[in-house]
Image (cartoon, rainbow, N blue to C red; front, side):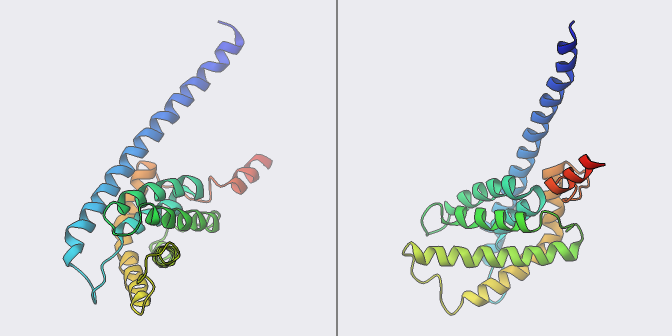
Length: 201
């Protein structure tokens, strides 16, 4: 076997391992999201606080942006929103676009922040959910869905965001397991800046 062939063998093995890891992570994320969607469509149809339910699809989208980064997170958020759109009376794609925009923005802003504590994660989930609900309402008005921006919007934003922040105590560990298979991960460790710093050592 020649030297190039010897060198390419570990590369092929690494690529195969990477593909397997990505596939397993995708399947785990789907399982977590479907469980959240089922809870949203069953339990939280009736269980509300001052008439407002948590937004579990938005919670999954926000956590995706926080845990896997802006690009991959926005893709997951778009898929999550698209599945949620099926059950909403608004145009198909409205939640998908809203979730993807927020996940990308949140993932970009927090790229170099370590948000692995419960308090930090809860605060970021609160902010991300508030942004998701607000963007959804505003975009809905832009495309002609009247009534989304009304006197109750502030209450819906605050209560749903607070509920999502509370539920993140349970959902965030599930999403970490889905994304990383139970491995602990500092989100800043794999960021481009961190990689550049390691490369300069």
